[in-house]
Length: 113
Image (cartoon, rainbow, N blue to C red; front, side):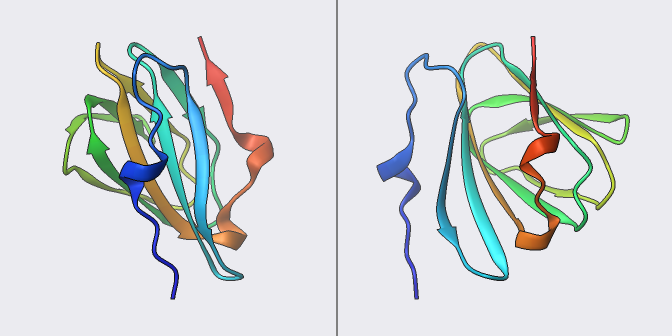
């Protein structure tokens, strides 16, 4: 069993985007993404479905062209093959992403300015 506490790895306080992978097995990966105020990130089309959980902050998400507001406690299913964008408001946002390891392609992630 592995236990990771998000509060121990968050880097909030106006910092630009940071990404930490506190838990990774051969099958699944949990990634904590902390975004600074007013940032937008684009993510490529993963090979498997993934789940995002907004730990804190507010913003918008666009998945496959559909846009919605997100905030603390939001849970978002990102279907495989869909490009998605995360945009923060004036506050930092921390998001937990959980997906199969074979659904992750680090070459497809890029920062949009």
